[in-house]
Length: 143
Image (tube, rainbow, N blue to C red; front, side):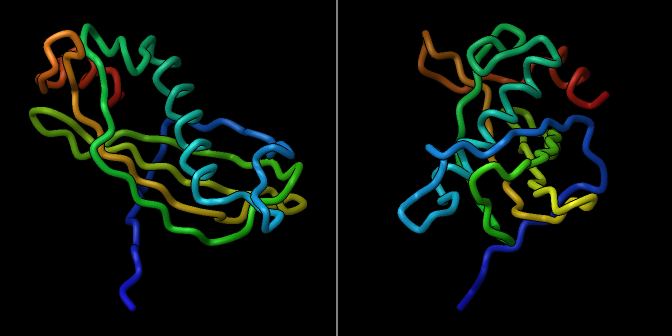
């Protein structure tokens, strides 16, 4: 059976720590696939905010997700501290990828819990059409 393998960039320029809540758990007693993407979404919002942006205000345009992939490595459980590192890469005319490294704290170590990639394009929600990546945003996200 073919498995998804996500190649991550060598460096990340942002990270945040999120503690797993009881409401993040599924019937199996651990974080499910939907919550992995929700955690990535939260980290992405924090990353954008750090740069003065939001998904609906990205240097004068919006962002919309075109695809997502998750590679699970470890369970995430109630009260786990999860460090999520985020970077943007693979820029082209209309979009780029966000990559996320999710690590769970194990004593003094951080162990890989998952890898996520989301493809994003710039989108004008008023006109309902794809638009070019703003030069300002390209510069900021590559700093």
